[in-house]
Image 1 (spheres, rainbow, N blue to C red):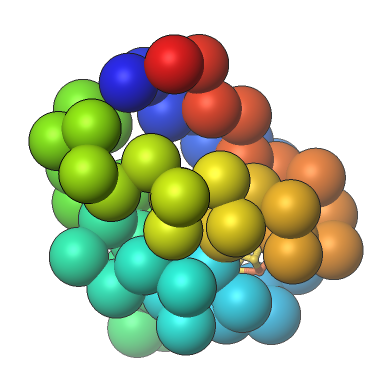
Image 2 (cartoon, rainbow, N blue to C red):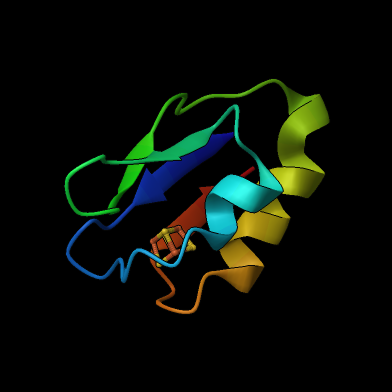
Length: 64
Ligand code: SF4
């Protein structure tokens, strides 16, 4: 699995962290998404896909 985030699109809503907090985090200063793991195990695919789907800014791309 490969995950790509676009920090310029991110609106700091935090939905991705709610879906997969082992993969996504938010910067303390402005809430913009930070990728903790760009190649999670296949078992995390459903939650990572969910994060991508719920992101209001379409800032998360998942290739699996
Ligand atoms: S869900 Fe999208 S907009 Fe919200 S913090 Fe995550 S990447 Fe940013």
